[in-house]
Image (tube, one colour):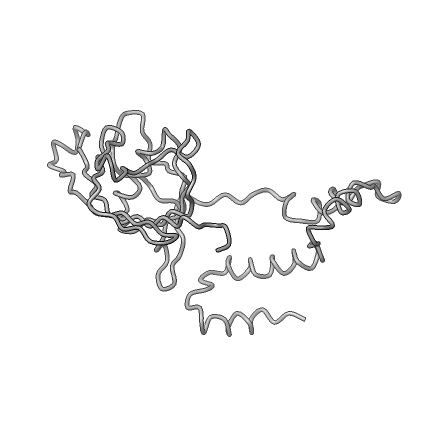
Length: 226
């Protein structure tokens, strides 16, 4: 027996703004339907090999194996829902004629305000400058990095180290290290972002690249054991 309205009302007393639209409320029902249709799907890791053999066997009636059945009854077989443009942050800094306003990120609601946070991926070598544009354009005064990978082509370093102090990213942004403090499992840096205005339109209209400050928090223990 489900009491979606009752439980939602009770949870909202401790989680203000937990559900803010009809679509979100409908999504609760869709999740419950998914759980009901799918049934029990978890199993101990020790049974993985046994489960793989079981799921590969076809039933004589449907002539399908368990992989096919689970796929068809679950949301995996449905068309993905793309986020509308009003859920993504736009880049407003002009960097070159080839640059666009797109960055792979999305707004996420905070505890008391909507669109309070931005979630994005670790930048690729050709999107590092876009990452700094995102931070600058949206006045991100805090950046939380939930990873500690080794510097590589897949995970390029995108902030200046303690040794170099200063690094340029693309034609527009130069980032300076102001200070840093490191603690067990957490490293912190404070950076000043200097912006060079390269757009002729912005130069003629008197737009200034005002320096901005942001603080990085890198969680070095994520996700092992935490």
